Length: 196
Image 1 (cartoon, helix red, strand yellow):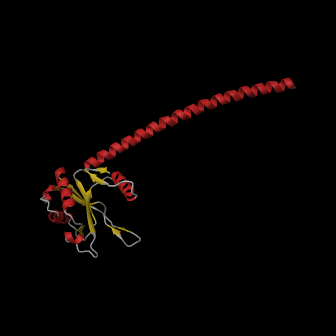
Image 2 (cartoon, helix red, strand yellow; image 1 turned 135 degrees about the vertical axis):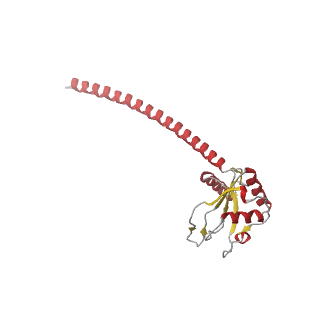
Image 3 (spheres, one colour; image 1 turned 90 degrees about the vertical axis):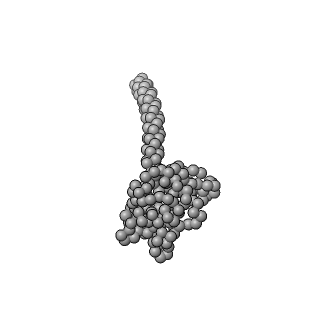
């Protein structure tokens, strides 16, 4: 009887040692797979960032005008022409390759505010976009919808910015939030880059 228990105990010990050995092998396999996954994840993130940088580079000739309400029978090129005249930029409509709304419907908020989709202007040359942005900065006053001949009540503030991809818009938003928290002194964009 005691010999039988000793034999069973020896067999159980052997099984337990085999299971422990196998468990260590599985743990090593899991560690290897986890490190491999981390490498793939990092590689995927690097590729995503490269794609976003390339997408932003395609927008180097584009600006976005926000704060202009959607009008019936709207002509975006007329609005752009009035903006060129207001900021004293010697650009013609032929210098604009396209002008379109970045969406169709305004967004209504619970506080009664309405956010109209931005008007995107693609210029033919990159230097036109630089000239436009430089003149807006030297204008010295804010632009309202009435300055562009749009009579809405109350007049809305008009903002002209570089066109950013959603990815870079998000980064810019987060950077401005850090500025508001006092962690960054200045935040701006130039040539599609977010600078602080």
